[in-house]
Image 1: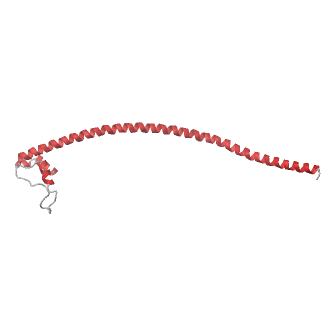
Image 2 (image 1 turned 120 degrees about the vertical axis):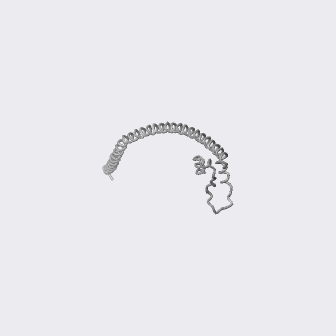
Image 3 (image 1 turned 90 degrees about the horizontal axis):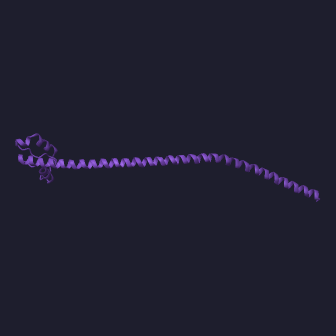
Length: 153
């Protein structure tokens, strides 16, 4: 082989490598452009995520404030309900005391005595366990309050 043909072969190999390099640079350029275009989208996504995070933090703060307010309201209502329950218990106790006094005046057992009798087992199990106590012929026993107390029992 002559030096001309060796030089030509070297030049052809260098030319082929240059063409391959140009093709690779073209592909690399396209990929870099796509990456740069995606960078703008990525910036928008990051900005949107930051805004959403800020809104979520504000919502969490609002929920905490609402929860604290509701907790205070519920505690206030619970205290009021406990007070009313205590007051109602006192009223029931006073009503039982009055019923006992009325029962003592009429010769019958009061509300507590009737409750004690209803708690005792009955000898006759064929009757209804919720049967009303026997009615006496005492005129005081027939007053509206005594009749109402019998219905409650």
